[in-house]
Every structure is written in structure tokens, then in C-alpha cells.
Image 1 (cartoon, helix red, strand yellow):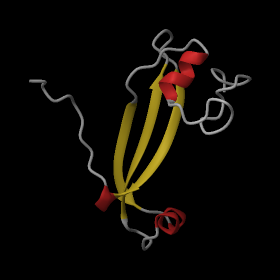
Image 2: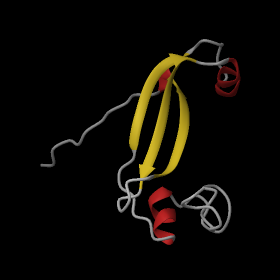
Image 3: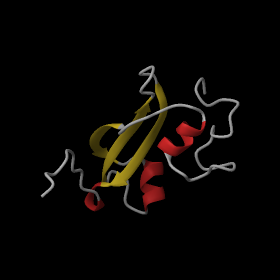
Length: 99
């Protein structure tokens, strides 16, 4: 809220800039962000997560905490907690060489 509060980009899926992506929304208020930092863990789904995903409780999920940082100040400007069904998600990190 310190970075976006009071601006038109405060909510990622609302307002005139809804759905345009984190980097583009932050650029509108003068903040440059790069590739997000993701913290990925594997665990069992909670009861509410299982209900949302349409699976049995305790199904394997990947929990992803994705944080974007301001290049100028290194402060976090947006964090999302994402839960995906483990059997439908593959995590691949790094950059493949270009030919």
C-alpha cells in the first residue's frame, strides 16, 4: 500500500489499468520492476484450497509466493500467493541458451 495506495493501480484486477500486468502497472506510477522472485513449496492443499481446486483435501499442491521489487529502492511492491494443483504444474527456472 505504501507504493500503490492512493493511485489507480492499487488493485491489480480493478480500475482502468486492470489486467495489464505488474511491470506495466508499476511503470504508470514511476516504479521499474524486473523479473519477480518466486518462492515455491510443495505441500498438501488446505480444505478451502481443495474445494476451490475441485480436488480432495490433502491433494499435493505447489504454493508460489511471487514478489516484485522496485529496482530503484529494492523494496517489495507487489506480492501474490498462488496455489496450483501439483499434478498440473511444472516449475522450470533459468534461461535456456539461444541458438
